[in-house]
Length: 243
Length: 243
DNA sequence: CGAGCCGTTGAGGGGATTCAAGCTCAGTGG
DNA sequence: CCACTGAGCTTGAATCCCCTCAACGGCTCG
Image (cartoon, rainbow over all chains, first blue to last red; front, side, top):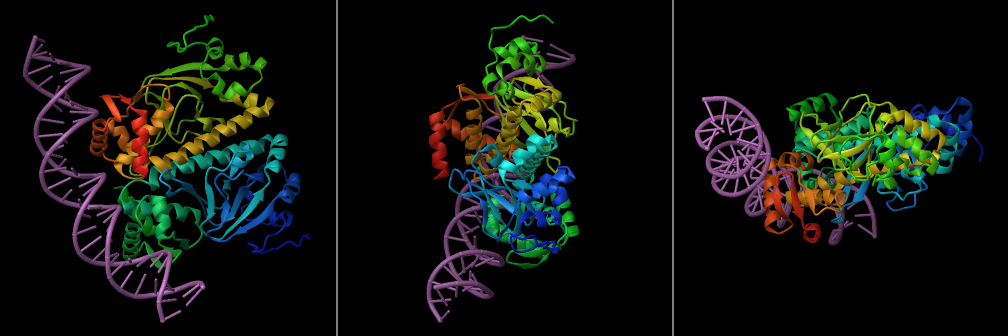
């Protein structure tokens, strides 16, 4: 496979790791960024690029994990089956996040990881992570930091997104998404069914909440799957909802 | 401090690590259990025992973490302040769990860890964990496994305990507690205020649900702070609630 | 063009919250 | 010893929010 470095920030086609990594926009936030500079080409050579369309699974529950990813762009949701058989979405992850880390422990995945938007990711072979981990303790430390971030995010989701009135939950969800897409004006807007499984609220209720936010100017140009978000209005609405 | 090994399974008074550890009932599940046998006395010497009464904090949010604990007995809750100022309980942990791991990363704690019942724990100095981690990669692997367990538990809490009707939430909470106190017939019963912050349900509603479960035989001899739990009835009620 | 899915909106009912009262119990002080 | 207090638990009644059921419109796709 020939190395033709693409200067585009987001090559749409899968690219060999080495060339892509050096221009990657999340490289500074990625796991391997703690490696010394001379190791980067080596590391990059073991990374493969992967693209996913919205709705594609990065990996599935109970799959023996051979997939650890760094998200470059897009949003990924984690879903698991509730004991009643219903899907529950328990967390979101965005650019810079490391996901599927349980593969490093040779454990099966506990959740599905599904692309909510088009997702560009780097697939890291567990063996490579382990190899570098042995030579560079700093990388192990970085790995643990990632685990802690995930735990934190999960705690915040449980503390904020699943509590309070339907209106407050939708606002908190928008807040989460806004942080994952900090630089975009149009943000991903989950379907009402997705909101059901994220917020524990029936789709009709989610729809009513979205409609209300549109009337109040927090959301505009609401299309299936995306909307324009007024972040200032969102902040005001959140402050008021927290009263 | 002289070493008088107590043969009681649960010495009430703080004891120096070495003697206590060798008879500790959770030793086989503890972090240091992956160390080779000849290292155990060394490890044990660095561990100090800590007792907490119900309501005591093992550590507090925003504290620069110098506290990593292995829980020996009892139940610990993790609480954080919601953006509205309300307390939110986002997870429980029980015997064998490693908590406060973020201290290893020199990060401040993100949550309060509070004893729900009397708690016996082993305090591990971060430096010791790091030291053994450098010599014994297996311990780092075990450490990551702990992180993953915590993440899993957090996901399950978000997926199960905070969803569905008030009745279902209380049942799921009892299920969590029953698993943390698998060998006890009387289990810890949180106060209605604690249930509020765990389940996102008002105390009156929690009280009504508890009363209903008592009438239906799932709970009996309900006293402030504890109750007798009919595990079979709980399983039936859960299966029915999940319909 | 009909079928099916998703989103929206309305009407009605049910479960949770709110408000309120009464209870037990531990602690306090007369 | 006992009234007094305050906190937590329970129960009742009224209100409100969310769920349920339903109808309709837009859209994609066969």
